[in-house]
Each structure stands twice: as C-alpha cells, then as structure tokens.
Amino acid sequence: MEQKQFDEMMENWLKRREQEAGSKNADLEWAVSAGITDGSSPRAYVTREESVLMLTAALRYWTSCVFRILKGEMELC
Image 1 (cartoon, rainbow, N blue to C red):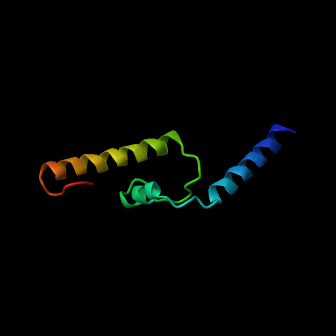
Image 2: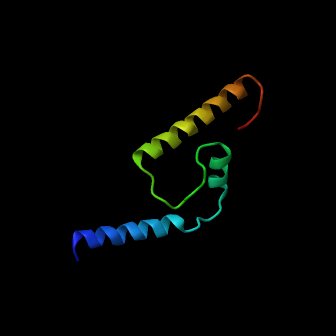
C-alpha cells in the first residue's frame, strides 16, 4: 500500500468516525449549555487549538460562577 492510499483510507475513516452519533451524556449536554462546545461531532478528534479554546471557555465559565457566588447572586453553578 502506498502512502497516498493509506492517507485516503485514514481520511475516510476519520470522517466516518466524526459522523457517528455520540452517546448522549450529562457532561456533553452541560458543556453545550455552558457555551464550551457546540456539541457537534462529539466523537471527532480535536486539535490543540480547539482544545485550548474549549479550556479557555470552561475557565471563563467557572470564573464567572465563582464571582457570582461570592457576590451572593447564586449558590451553585
């Protein structure tokens, strides 16, 4: 098998895997509601850039929760 054939097969496999429906779970639903991810393609691999963006969004979410708790505006996030 040549590299080009392997690359095409791998690309096909990754596309199929990305399109598979992920299992619905509370963590994914929470992440969507918190604005950390849009929930599309939950089984797709992420790049370092995408993971940094999601981590930053999660940190912003939790930081805003802490400030609201400290102000007495809410009990839990």
